[in-house]
Length: 368
Ligand SMILES: *Cc1c(COP(=O)(O)O)cnc(C)c1O
Image (tube, rainbow, N blue to C red; front, top):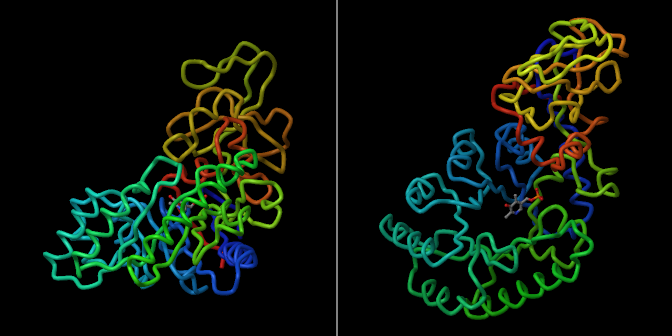
């Protein structure tokens, strides 16, 4: 890759191939692989990532919202797409784009059946989501009878899968809770399958779930963060490769004398001679204001340069007093060596938040 001359998010598709292979090495041969590509494939680029993953032969995609699924269909993606959090007003559009809804309450199940019948569907694939402890979205175990009677009364739909989501699969202290969730889901799945008379796919694990709980692989796993290079634990991070590198450049260098201030609201005051670099990346590009005032940092010539003062909309200023660098030099915000995980630690956040925050204004470039 040539050196960056503007702010860029470089996405390494070879690293994506590597991460898929690593995750698959943890699965049995016949376990299906659902790739989670919501939120622009965790801030990278949903279309390019989905095309590459489709080429690698993943079995399923998941997005959060219907519009995200439409974008993939319009780009020519033909693999089944599960929409994790659809809204009923849009069910007609969902069906028109051959997207498959997660149905998580009687309200949305009823609404979906109504629309599917209006559109004269037969055996339209749906996914029934159960709440086994996250208390976010999902039917309760106690609703099984009601669900079954709704399902039996309509030929418009067919249950493609039953699924649930783990609450704390990366927290070793919560192992007993996770095992309880797995057990609850197993019982729900058994009861429903028996009553339906056919076998829907079962799935419960996200990335940490599949890495930490082989007993929760069921028929399919849903991996998001692992694809993008993070395993939520050092042990797994060592095998995964972050696919995205956020780069920028030095626009201008300033030298502050003791007593000079920097940036909005004069938030930084120099105590001694301080050299600063101004970079064309700010909170509108995904650099949280939380990272300002010495918490966050970037890397220039391999050296750590803390962010000084407040993060502006389009710029940050960093401390380069001890770094030998020039205007036009490349800057790494996060990447393979200096990871988004490390940056997230400085503001008590997680890799997910740092990588998904990179805004659409930042140009994406692909390494193939
Ligand atoms: C986002 C999401 C995932 C992916 O989780 P990762 O931790 O990124 O692997 C899986 N399942 C559901 C229901 C999700 O919302």
